[in-house]
Image 1 (cartoon, rainbow, N blue to C red):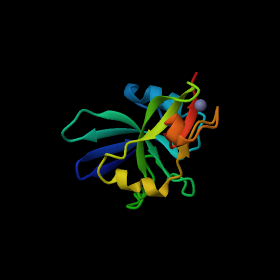
Image 2: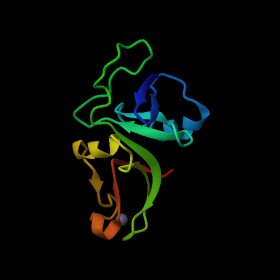
Image 3: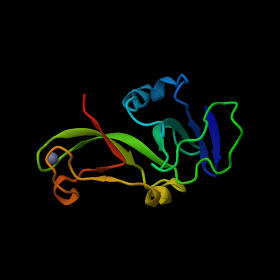
Image 4: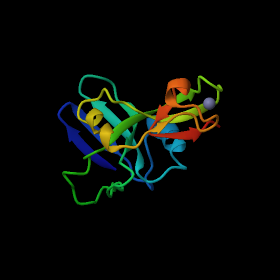
Length: 143
Ligand SMILES: [Zn+2]
């Protein structure tokens, strides 16, 4: 696990092989099928309760070594977006997905969204974003 200090809190990001705290277990299970660049993370803002998130590196930029003995890299969080696992329903065909949904309202991380390719539209019925209201960093089958 790597702990990153932020001006307004701290972020703990977990490597694939590491145990996670109970609060992160549902997130970690949801991410099991995804690439290594989707990592479970615990955000601890100074002024709000801690919350489970997904730290997402862009597709062209693999996640750094997140184990505790890795050399600290001041650029490790560049272009990282924090996301939540949401259930989305297609407004056209009612298919439901678990979505890795970017939180663009967070300081620092919100403005990194431009480095990421978003899934726009419903993979089930092919409706675009306007009709389906489906948009996410990636979609997971709803089990
Ligand atoms: Zn659909």
